[in-house]
Length: 235
Image 1 (cartoon, rainbow, N blue to C red):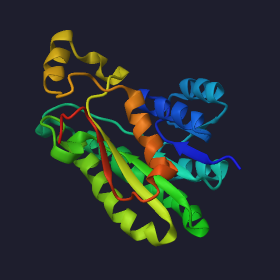
Image 2: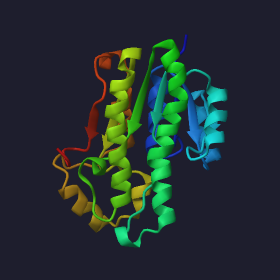
Image 3: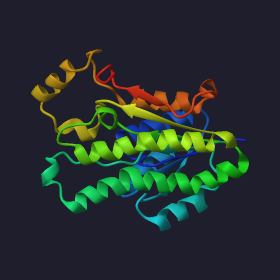
């Protein structure tokens, strides 16, 4: 029987790459989206999957997505947002939104879909954090805190559900060339490149490959781990 996966934030650069890779690995992919319905539908058609609306901050959306997807074998918590500004300039509303999407939403999705995994004593959860969750970033304090929370969540949940045969791991990307980073000037990009020991920018496929590995049988003895995909920028 074909395994099933739900990928949240599937319409973005990293999310769509993850969906394509897992589809190539043989998964039936539920491409979760919040606002980018058209992109998600096009992606789902391309990979013979299904687009599913799931705003991770909305409990009813999560519940409805669970009804549509049923029991899944793999959950990839990829949905996330960022805000670059001084910590003292971020509004309370923006701060709450970052936490609700990046951390609380990820936890609520996991809580919902984990129930079926526990009953079957089988399943895998992969969370997408960030290198800034490992070391912190100036002018991205709220974002860094939310991504650090994902790392702590991954380690704790991995211990809790391991006796049920469920693995929980985390991928921690570095600077990945996506549409979100197109705002940087060529000069800024060159300065960033100089900070990357491998001397190249990451691509969405690099994150997708890491997710694919952690979801595979080759990683059956790996849980509670943080797989950094950053070209050596954070070691």
